Amino acid sequence: MDFNPLPKDVISAKARRTTEPPIAWLMRMPFDDPQIISLAAGFVDQESLPAEEVAECVHEILAVEKNRSALQYGTSQGFFPLRQEVSRILERQGAGKSVSPDEILLTAGSQQILHLVTDVLINEGDIVLVEDPTYFVYMGTLQAAGARVIGVPVDDEGILPEALEDKIRFLERSAGLENLKLVYLMTYFQNPTGACTAWHRKERLLEILRNHCDLGRTTFIIEDAAYKELRFEGGEIPYLKALDRDNSSVVLTGSFSKSFSPGLRVGFGYLPRPLLEHVLRQKGNEDFGSSNFCQHIVRQAIITGRYAKHVEMLKAKYRAKRDLMLECLARYFPHEVEVIRPLGGLYLWASLPRGLNTGARGQLFREATQKKVLYVPGELCYCEEPGIEKPTNNLRISFGMVTEDNIVEGMARLGEAVSQVLR
Image 1 (cartoon, rainbow, N blue to C red):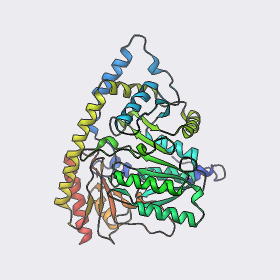
Image 2 (image 1 turned 45 degrees about the vertical axis):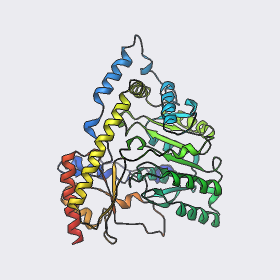
Image 3 (image 1 turned 180 degrees about the vertical axis):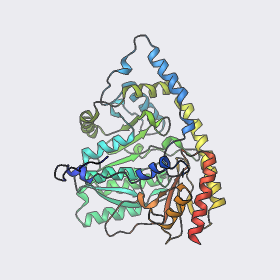
Image 4 (image 1 turned 135 degrees about the vertical axis):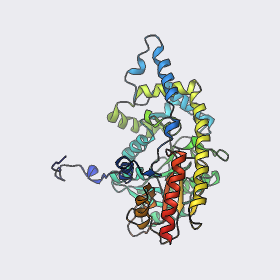
């Protein structure tokens, strides 16, 4: 469709800063060519989506005589019985000894909480520290808000404390620390690396931030735990939120998208009350309450035991798919390729020899697309910082949505492409 673009002075500054998500074109390619195997899509396993369980929940909700409340508007904060269930889940998982439903917010996926908290806290030019690489969709939110994003390196145990302290000391020297509003962390099976932040590292991170920042007043931490329940190996690690004993400085976000159904779009947050007050005002103006009916469905799944049973099934499913992808990587890829072995989540993060460009304009991506297989170029996952060169030899592949047969075929195609480029 042809159209005349609006004049720049008509569009708001925020809208001008907003760009298409960097992965959007990758998501479109398999629809344009069904022969393409996408190892790029971070979607959940299609065959495991709980169609029967959701149908049963809907029937039970609507079967109650004259129960039409689920079809009515809800509240901005969300369905109270589900907030109670989330509170109990978080208490069992160690987020706090007493989590009040009044401190829980229900949203349209955890992405909405990231958006709302950013809107409430970030003015143009404010600083956000993020893991580097990090969740690139949130980078778009921060870009639109006009934030100055600074990356902190990570390894297979999460963000590096020494690097975090170095960045903070740099901000102190440059008089920028007062503008540090957020520190964004994905502490469980991080997207894109699959790394899980160790407990001793969480303690050290919070110690550093408390020593240097006015936590809970000018600076907050977002602990994004979207993949928390998809652990299929190793012992449980308590939330960073567990160290925020007075609920003053850490925003914990979670989601039922990865552990149950992304189509229902139900996420949750556990927020400090002073911040929650402002987020609720913003949310009320934005959506007048997320889907009340979907919140009823999730609550019904929890109280009937269907949710817990589904999570256990998913963990076994994803473990098998991860193991298959690692087997294929060992079989089809050159030995020079290194990978972080994830203990949960949906992703593998591979590092190729330095000097090999995995970017969208690089030779490997051209070879891969010719062989009809897709990956996420690692360059998309690093934040842009003027004057700071970022690695160009990484790639992210996902075992979430792709079938077992396509894991084998897709990894064979991608391994062949890597071998050709290395030769």
